[in-house]
Image 1: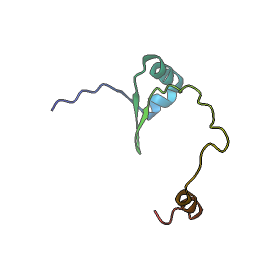
Image 2 (image 1 turned 30 degrees about the horizontal axis):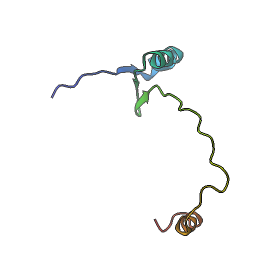
Image 3 (image 1 turned 30 degrees about the vertical axis):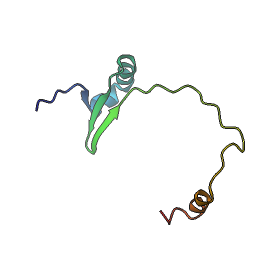
Image 4 (image 1 turned 180 degrees about the vertical axis):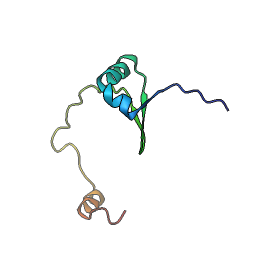
Length: 78
């Protein structure tokens, strides 16, 4: 099985030194970047903010009795 490295991998010091450049590149090219840290890997990915969804009108959402019981019990019954 052949694996290809399609994501750019940076060290934490390189990513930290050029953070604004790296993030601009990620946003412009829409390609994620991996940052290798001593604790593991961090991924910087582009994200498109979805269109604004208006809030639901008051009293349009009703909770069931079970949902209310679970919310009042800190979820001990789960």
